[in-house]
Length: 162
Image (cartoon, rainbow, N blue to C red; front, side, top):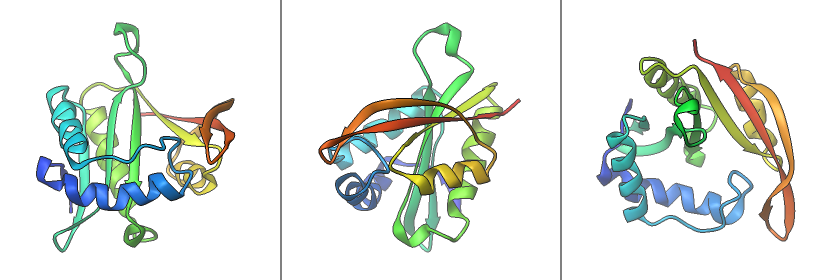
């Protein structure tokens, strides 16, 4: 079931997100999240009327997707950037597609025109996933991410929602 995140989902989210932060190129961020930070993010997205959705299966949170404004300022009010993170148990089950459909629908009903994915150059699975759901590669920003002792490219992918 795809549903809005609640602050009490935060502990389950960090349980699958932090290993991905530590061990993979899914994100450039090397700092692990705390449950309090995630709960604050859930509340902040709700206050801004930006989506933060979770996939719940048999009481377990197996992934989340959220979005926020791509860049600050009124000129970017209809351009959003999303985050999607899946637990290993969610992969290959259609959960990522369901989360993305939910977050895109949420954004579309709020007048969002453009959804951006910032995908690590070290995450080819993420690029393939986004391409499969209609995102086009629009830019590569060379060597802007730093992780595991080296620089990585950032691949920007875009889907027009309206």
